[in-house]
Image (cartoon, rainbow, N blue to C red; front, side, top):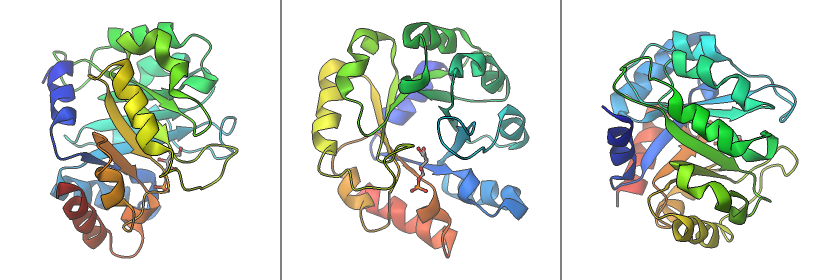
Length: 231
Ligand SMILES: O=C(CO)[C@H](O)[C@H](O)COP(=O)(O)O
């Protein structure tokens, strides 16, 4: 599958579900991965360094250890993401997104992602992604829009806490589409079983969920969420 084939998958309706594996039971991440495989969703990994966000989560060796053929969607919520792009590519990332607010040279980092070879399939590149904190306007990526394959619109930021961003989302999605209609759009953070249908109706290509997927009965949650976004 080429990078473009991955993008074609992401652009196909209905929107894709990308599930944050770190919200699974840490005593058995393997079971979490097998569950995601049953549903064919994307595997999302939130990488935090304790600097951008207070938490420290997982690095490239953890991604490499999550052995699965699922598409791996890596979100670098870290300072100097450019220093870690090659390691995550080598570990099997299919999508690498980074916080533009914490990257010195966004354009060069997008180029760097585009130069990587996918570890699982040398013919497959890496999807070049950026994420925008809730307070960051879409205009911040205007100058690099032609280099971006995917944009993640965050509902939560390191300083904003969990908040409803539903009101602001349609305008942000429209602004990304106006920049470059080929860009794949993910929404991420504060997604619940109650709001996922409403979010899907706004037309993103993907929805990232963590805690809502793994609370209670994960299989039922994921099944329910997929049904909500498939209508
Ligand atoms: O990227 C993230 C943080 O920026 C996470 O994916 C997000 O916080 C997951 O949130 P939730 O558990 O509410 O689904």
